[in-house]
Amino acid sequence: DTAIRFPAANTFSVETAGSERLRITSAGDVGINSTAPATRFDVVESSAGRTWTPTSSVVSMFERAGSSIVSIIGNASGVCGVDFGDNSDDNRGFVRYDHSDDSMRFRTNASEQLRITSAGLVGIGITNPDAKLHISHTAGRGIFVDDSSNSSNSPYIQVLGRRSDGNSKQSFSGQIFLSSLRTDQKVADGKSLGSVIFGGNHTDGTEANILYAASIAGVADDDFDSDTDMPTALVFNTGTTGRAPLAANVTSGDERLRITSAGHILPGAAGTQDLGSTSKEFRHL
Image (tube, rainbow, N blue to C red; front, side, top):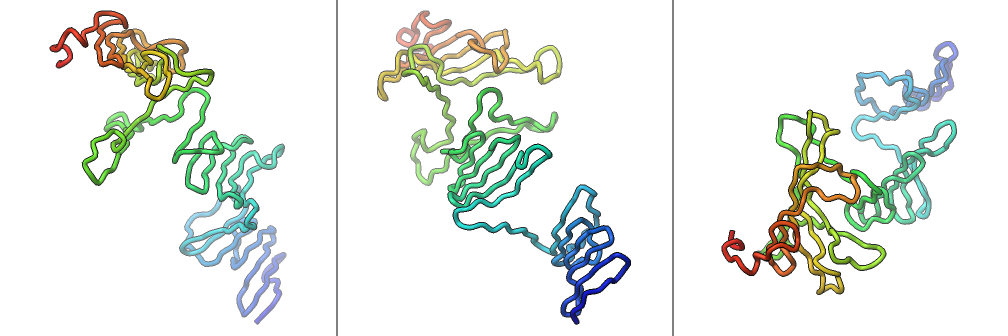
């Protein structure tokens, strides 16, 4: 019940326990538990009922009814992975698991682009993320949510804060933090801290014509001298002239209203009449 056979011209097979285990065809294709290997190396643990034929670009194939897993085993301090190379680079891209720190790394264009740490933190463009999703990017779009339909409701970003009691503080609700870091010194008077900017397309229906002409911004009311001395105002800007997202040294819209750190309301550009202390009716409205 064990044999080496030549079941057809230029074909070689090995049998054990009365069943064929390995076959090399006349084309040089190798099949394990497959009498008709469909790729150069074809492993069939059990038939999955495949109804399609692999293309010529498929070099090897592993098949099993149910789950099918290929294991790559290394020691506790080693790295396991799959490298993607070309004629001039042995690992232009890769997927690697580092057992020394239990991180997973992904490379494209010869540079690591994404890492998942042992804690499940995901870093895009950064190797030491400190958030569930940490994106490091130089300029341009960091996150872009694009509506795939021009007739359905638009997609949205939702931040849901869960709380099992009636605590009404901001820290127990959904939050979005916008901030500015001056790496040379503390934040100084007049520094923009973060903005929500509004825009749309002009002239025709092309995405390239989207510009932004209004905004709501947080602005430093004075120098930030300590954690209890960070006077911050809210500024509302509107206008008719749009700006591109990457335009430098500009503001979307002109200042129409400012709420100072003291709660005073200044209509128009900063420095005009303070209605916060003179008009109770305006404050109520």
